[in-house]
Amino acid sequence: MNCSHFTARRCLSCTELPVAYPDQLSAKQRHCAGLLSAWPRIDWLPPVASAESGFRNKAKMVVTGSARRPVLGILGADGKGVDLRDCGLYSASLQASFEAMADFIRDAGLTPYDVAQRRGELKFLLVTESPDGELMLRLVMRSEAQLPALHAALPALLQRLPKLVVVSVNLQPEHKAVLEGEREILLSEHGDLRMPVNDRVLHLRPQSFFQTHTDIAAALYRQARDWVDEIRPASIWDLYCGVGGFALHCAGPWRKVTGIELSAEAIASAIRSRDELGLARMEFIVGDATDYVRQASERPDLVIVNPPRRGIGEPLARLLDESPAVESAIYSSCNAESLARDLRSMPAFEPVRVRLLDMFPHTGHYEVIVLLRRREVSST
Image (cartoon, rainbow, N blue to C red):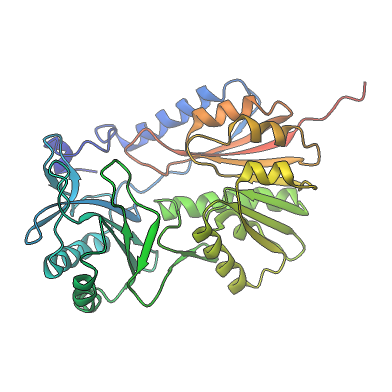
């Protein structure tokens, strides 16, 4: 992928862009294999490659400039805004939506937040695109002061972008490096974005997490489902379940599936998808994964974990390791270093299959999914 912003050193976020894509993928495979070298009997499945451009479903745009001439992109090294509306990571349709959003900022008179001066209202635009081309727009604002102006300008934006189905304001009043706050104000009629993935429709509310690469997320869910169908567990826990991607893909008419997630918004999304699919033997619960496992009176046959970059941590790893009823586990990780650390805390399990999926092209990051089987206990 050629990028004028990288060549001009205006944006260096894609750190591996000068490396040919096949070499990027090979380097990631070597990195992951090195971290998991303590388990030499792993069956390594072929890595899942990405498209080299137009793959990202979410834009996190810092808003700088002025209300009359907003700049959407990032803050440069000099503290000034760098316009990235033509970033090659985004699809053509997502790129095309940014012009209407910039005009919306102008029409509503939204003053971009000046970090140095600590003045202004609009901090970020967070835009998500579904596989059907529908859009969710979130405006991260410092206060509610310009809500009337937003409401007044919104009809014109919706007319220009008929596929914009969800619009909300997130309030982040503090002057610190936190992307968003806790409070969300819905401006649109609809409150969630439909995300068709494989043969499932997931629902994203404004504060729900979803992977930034829909095609790779779809491949990730298919891989987990294939392993689950092979093992045929009667019961599954999906810890850190988010909007239910893994749980919904691995459900079956005779299989009990329970998803655990801290985000109430994500759980509400998962419940909606479950109800639409008529999956009666599924339960989604708001809660902490480690606390849930510690307090549960029974254990499932298989556990799926998809934690944030920090991993599941030693307490949860030990709880699973010391649960003999859990015969198999699937660990999906966006950080192979924390994955390897967690696996060392689970000596009762052996990783038997691994697949790398390139969720983050042109960077050193990737997703990896691991199938774990409990080791057989010697009778002697």
